[in-house]
Length: 109
DNA sequence: ATGGTGACGACGG
DNA sequence: ACCGTCGCCACCA
Image (cartoon, rainbow, N blue to C red; front, side, top):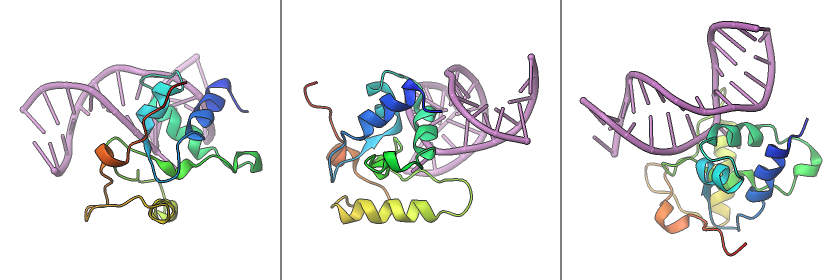
């Protein structure tokens, strides 16, 4: 079932604008769950319902600026890379995003 | 219950 | 910059 924590996480992710990215830890903190970055990964992994179509899960990457490796075949990683590139996010030769440039900063609440 | 796992992250070497 | 370790905690078998 969908817990309040998951809803809080999705609400934050929905605010990340096109062409910008946020880290798991950043989303966790903004969602009121400081130190629980892993839970953000779980919440995004659980995104499968139609009502979650508006959650831009691909804009969440890890603190090193990389697309986090999933278990199993990495098809989703590839999709995430493409979606981000399509919105203008650039990757260096190591597949990393320059967070100092592309990181989303929360505006005034 | 309970132990293993993992879309993470800070830290130390 | 690159590992390994440890803390974290919801999920699941």
